[in-house]
Length: 115
Length: 114
Image (cartoon, rainbow over all chains, first blue to last red; front, side, top):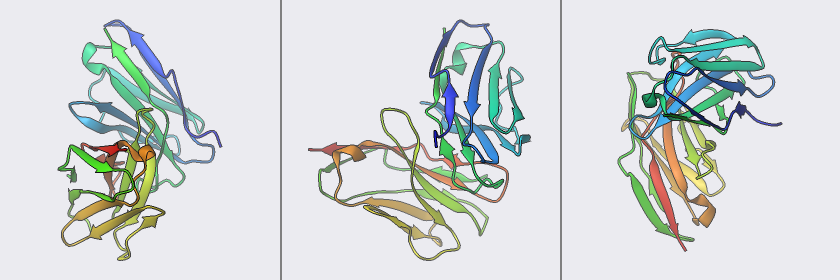
């Protein structure tokens, strides 16, 4: 199995630009999670999908952030407009069961730098 | 809200020795899961071990074992026979029955001295 796939691995953009991060979960997994990792705040859950439906988006910091999961094999996290404080590593994770306590498998992350 | 605390920002151990990383958590739930994840310089988050709160037996995966003390809300990770490849950030994480995903501690940076 290829594991969770994220693209791009690195993204550098200028303030005000739109950024789209992509994730392909492990085939057959029913839950997908987006996390953000910064030095100051550590790892934080942004949003969680269960069978393609957003369950908990309370961690999404602002309306500038949006996430979609149009099908079981693809999700996007979009930031529009981006700001320098959005610079972080963004992780996508998936789990087999539609249960947040199930083991989550992480992708390699996308390092986002907003200048 | 649940919180996870890792009180050791950095730990150092000699190769082949044993090291214990500490983790405490706060929750009002009785049924939950605890995890240790490893993050090497590649940034990949790798599951090390998982413990279900209703199981009294401590989880073990090869050289990795936990000391789970439910009453004390403590979940420490013991690494035996430390190897150079164990050098990484280690994150303790909690997951309860609510739709909250994982709550992570701040991490412990483990250094292996050759």
